[in-house]
Amino acid sequence: MRDFFSLEGSFNKYAGFLADTLILSLLWIFFSLPVVTIGASTSALFYVATRRIANREGYISSDFWQAFKVNFKRGTIIWLLVFFVSIVIIWNMMLAIQEPEIMGAFATMILPAQVVLLVLVSFVATFAFPVTARFDMGVRETLKTCFFMAIKHLFTSVSCVALLITLVGVSLFFWEPLLFMTPGIYGMLASYLIMRVFKKYRPEMDKDPVLELQEIEQKRAEEKRRRELGLGFTAEADGNIIEEKFEEEENEEVRVEE
Image (cartoon, rainbow, N blue to C red; front, side, top):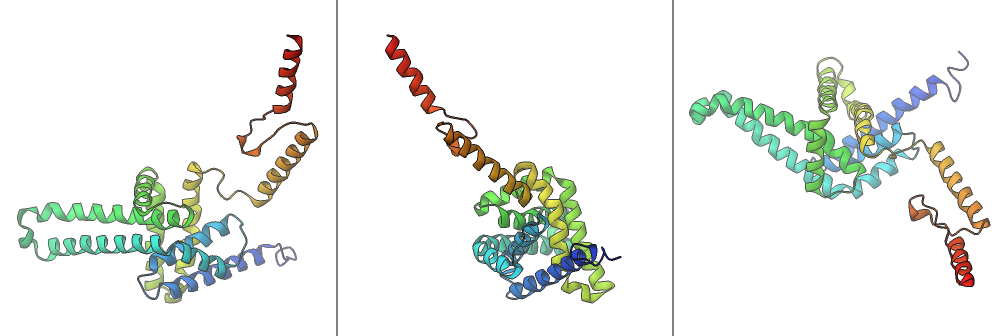
């Protein structure tokens, strides 16, 4: 029991997680109030969440604000595209259901097609804001990348959409105060799934800070050792050791023999 309440115990760990989640949710709600900024706010949320699950410590408010500013333009454009495309699809679905005579014989075909499109848009949006938060891409390249990820990693797409629907449903129909924590909870849980996808393409992404520091120290020690041995070594050479000094000495020996 004493270990449970210690500084490194489970109680402080989970209490800290809940506090971070609540703060992250409130920041998202506040920065999303103008509505048009939802995209930038969601990108900032995923930036903080993905860093948190990788044990990248920092100040939530300052990290959120920095990510919000950096991703404001791209996040806003992507959000507006997703929003207006979704509105058009939903409008077509309503017309097909309520006034099928307007679309004539195509009404029965349009409805399932629009449902498929709406699901696809939701899958792409699932990846769009995390990709915006963690990768430096243009809007078009971001959407193409998200489409590829959404289709290839279908389980993650379905899981994230189902998670969001479940959280919103529980909040609306069972416990309304949960709405204030839904953004943060979704961001944290979805980040676990999404980061597994990201690391398939970028294995070095958000390494354990302790391991990363160990690798840096090992590299520095190796460079120092090689300098002491008189080897010309450049870290940018992708691990290839360029023994310039030894090559020059060999060339001089050849000339003497000639």
